[in-house]
Length: 448
Image 1 (cartoon, rainbow, N blue to C red):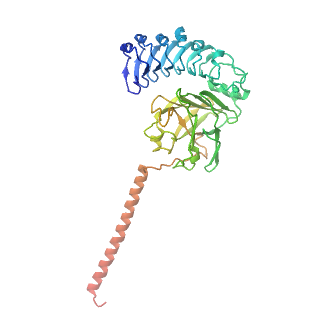
Image 2 (cartoon, one colour):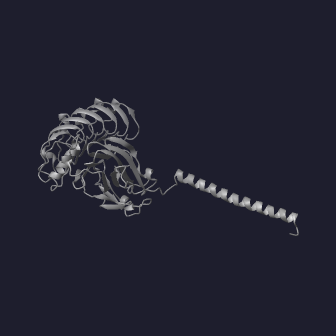
Image 3 (tube, rainbow, N blue to C red):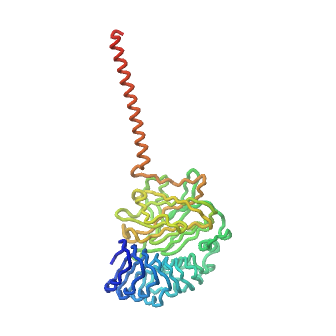
């Protein structure tokens, strides 16, 4: 039963318990509130439960542990609190578990994955305890980022083991696992103050070609957009120590292995630099970009987009946050750009006071999911640029409109037309006066 995206409000009625044969229940992206009804416990045949993007609050519902046939559980982005019940270990068939962005607490050990587990996303909560060794395995995509009370050790050389693991913002000791330059840069991402000792240089500008190779644009001085082609798997991050930035990603479609990069060979119209929009980084759930070492002050953030995957009737919608402040909800690239494979830019002014700029793009469950293929959804970004507003070289690669003319263009056309008519009228009037004067002269002096 799919009740998602229906603007449903109020509390969940207890009568749902009567649907004992229900196997799929998706009521995400509504306006439901209040606690989850305890009467729901008889839904023992349930295999897929989605309840994200609502206003449901209260303690984590213990009766979910009775849904032993569950394979897909997504209850992220709400106000659920408290520890995970011990009975949660009954869910031995879970393949996809997403509990991100709640206020959940308790021992991480209670989420111990089973042989069937493939995706375990528990970031942005208050889980605690040591990272169990069973969590660190190549077959499991694990997100425990921004759980400041999780500690423990990473195995040696996690990159060599091809792990999909995101642990940014935890207290895990990574000294054995990554080099010192990466470690000191990561320390800045979960501190209120990022001391100068944690980065090499204080910077005032940044540019990256998301999902593409290094690109240089001259306007009139050269701007270098960094390479961003590291595959982050289903959960992971990459640290660029030379240019002092980090990209982090969480999300994968359980039904289809979806690309983390997309590109097109088709020409992007309406821009002086089409190659910047021909590649993009994408995610089924969330992308973060962190720029580290920015000097204190005001900055202009420019985000570059072109939809190069989803054509009508499909629709990609996602949210954009900068410095933890939402600036766009249900952002639709195609609508903003005026069409498919058209460029559009967002410009936002921000003040940096702690040396770190955070850009967060995340899917909110809206839009289409399967056009032109399953897993075609989630945030997509072509490039990012950050600079001081007073910089002499601060104009972006322009995204010119190529569809309907703007109101300003229309007004300029009207003014030009009126001016032309006035000139023509003046010429005609002058001609008429001259001919009349000649006729009068001939009448008065016929022999002249």
